[in-house]
Length: 499
Image 1 (cartoon, rainbow, N blue to C red):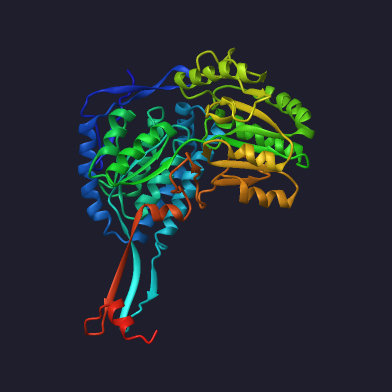
Image 2 (image 1 turned 90 degrees about the vertical axis):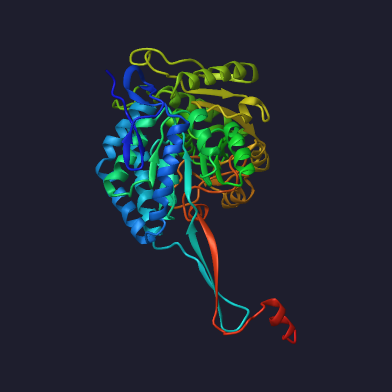
């Protein structure tokens, strides 16, 4: 009998009010049933909101450095459990253990960074325009934060959202992607062990339409942070706009690696292999477009195809595996639909089919796939596939490459390989993305820098770095007038002024 897992609400592990559960299976080995997780509903969310309200009332009054100290302890515990959590994440999500270890390390880095920010929630002290008057700003927590996270970074992304929210003094309700319920459960166990007070962190498992939608629409949850598809993000944005909620959206990408003729070709090859096929292409920052200058196009494609053909597919916990499965049958079916589109628009030079054979038939494996002759503006060139599919596009010069990069509706990440410092700095200035790398792939964000994109990738807020702390807190201004008389600001001040 498979183990039934629970929600974490008000400091207790509790069964779902619905009494219903869903299966969590290994995407590399569908016969491997990991367990049963709560298929929660509205009553569970209401329970979590009530608990989070109580938790907020005590947590918001806890000094920020003390809140940071708990997150320092969280980081220490994650270090101790790094390999265990990484292997659990690989089992339910599919990417290699090397990648899930990196996922957990990102959570560790975020915990330690958040701990230090507990002593750096800066406001400003500025001169008043009036005599005997003090003016300053400071940061206050907002309330309950609803956090909705995806499957592809089952540990890192929850920490990006949760840790800054907690340091700022908020309570949280988190709903992880239903494909990866176990990893966040382990994270919450760590928070519990570190001493997070009851009600401050609440975990409600389940599906988007049954849990996520209820969180987004709940009138007592003033802050929503969502990472997922642009289509779902539009719905979340509309609801939050109507309800005047603070909202951070992190959505799709169609990221390009540009390789100029003067680039280090071996380095560029390493970059695109990692960017396109790491995490089986299931990153919002994945390299889904490769732009090659005419002079090096043919040789680069030949070398890339040979290298990609050597990638080993398999269960991410096995030695020597480079590429794991897609996360679900639905994800693989989506990729397959794009194969039909791709064959009509371009030339398939590698892959294009399900991967079969020893160790692969019980999982959602798909061959690393490369299309050449992809035309700017085509569906392969502009639509997010979220799989191990790379579209190769020719260009003549930097102007054309930058124009092709900018033509898509997304604007998350971009990459340029070149030895030309002028092209490098033009790329920073002209590529319409939130992140641009020079001589590195389109993936590789660091926890202490802001992360996010422009256009339909997001709504202007950033995860990570110092900016996210501004999202999870309100600025309040305080004035102290010790003049002992009524001062009517601009009325008295400027009527008395000779200017």
